Length: 531
Image 1 (spheres, one colour):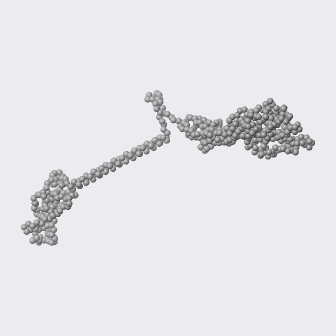
Image 2 (spheres, helix red, strand yellow; image 1 turned 60 degrees about the horizontal axis):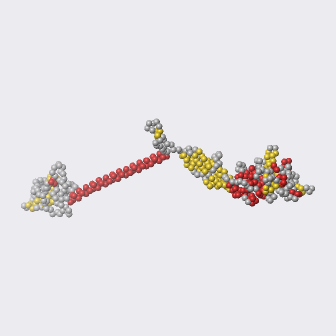
Image 3 (cartoon, rainbow, N blue to C red; image 1 turned 45 degrees about the vertical axis):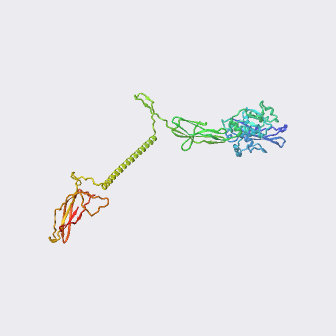
């Protein structure tokens, strides 16, 4: 409290013809080795009951640990609604205050630097205030207190890209300032000192390089700083994402990504496991990732880019690592040295299995072709045999029906065939005596064997009243032997049996035909049978 009472003074300028205005200041106070950040707002409070001038001094004190959660000092001085502007009580330490409104200011932004753009014509000039040396004085007669606080707030927020070593909010609390120097002020308390010409202390604190705050200009800036001051924050977006790669064992893989954003985004690479869990790759914070000798198989990587406006994640890039090709060495015939005359490729198990299946398929197909060809040959041979047999059989039938002479048949004795000689017609004669029908008993059978009168052998056939069918030819075939004639009279039933044996006949083509002739010789009845 005693230290804060040292800052409780106010110079009434109206007594000397000046203008009363509130004073805003930011100090760093060291109390017994502990640093405190003190924000003060001092204003005129009129006259007291004795007619003396009066003022109100309201102070906010922050520890170094607290400033990280609050906005920068000029924003608190300008926008916090908790500043007390009227007080009728004794000096008091305010406790148990509601700081929700103060915490809500942490999300307020002051870029793009619109106030610097309006006052100086270019938002980049906000970096000029950061470039000035400590203890510089600025004339602010042409600017209101609110404008001065806005200019300081925008410059301090530009620290985000001007000084990237730490959080700009924490760094902003180290830039002490006052919006109006008073005679009781210690110049060493402030880095930036604003002076009004109607203040008697103006001549005392004016430095040789003193100039109007509106005349401050930046001397150097980068493209990122320009974009940040003029456009403000923009979330990062990828313009080039990492692509898949395929390498051989022992090689290195390179992944490249590029993202644009304001401020420039930061990169962080991750390895991705099978469960899609990302593991941080320490130190990999550049747009390019180099992985030396990755493991065999498939590995996955992803990069995340982020700035104060947001973050973005790239596609998952994969790298496929194959086994290195192993070359078999060829030994020389002498066995003393290795000659690199050829290489042997070692097939994988999968390639060997595919080749085995292919050979089996080719072998099965070749066997099927041979079997089909064999069957076709057998069917052709059987067809030829069948056609030949059928043709021979048809030819024989044709020749047998049309030829004037039958082919000669070989005899069973291997000698001269019966058809080589002209056949002799055989006449079988049987006699019956009708005058003596009772010469023998009814139950007695009389066998009569008689020598048949053989007629002279002639080539010509006997005449016949039977006509042959159309296409038939009369010809002598075979020889008749073993002629037997029997007359049987049993129970007044008369029957004449005639039998003979034929030689030189074909059973499947020749037939025996009995022909009966009934000539009358000397008053007797005689039946002659021609065979």
